[in-house]
Image (spheres, rainbow, N blue to C red):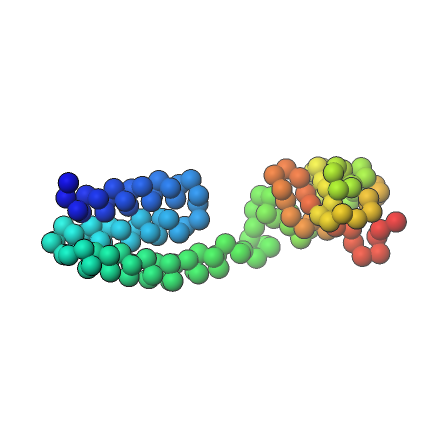
Length: 147
């Protein structure tokens, strides 16, 4: 089997692994394996192939990943879906403790639990949404709102 084929198989395997992890790292390594396959196809020795792969990996990981990470942290006004609820204020519908409760956030009622183990928050009190875990809002009572 030709060496360039091995590089293409490696790129495909890394690409498939990226589809399962969605971290961007394996995808960039898959892309970096393609120039190494070209070098192998042109008859470059193993050291040059590895150097090409390593150089491509460093460039992609060093340049593309920070840009992608910056775009992942969108301002609150541009977020959609459950991510848009983080930082919002909600009103407790049924008492919220560290295991269960209901909170109205922006007109919708969400299952909720306290982000940190604290005194349960009774109905009618306001809370801040700290995170979303599946379909459950993780909340903290507002300062001065704990009974």
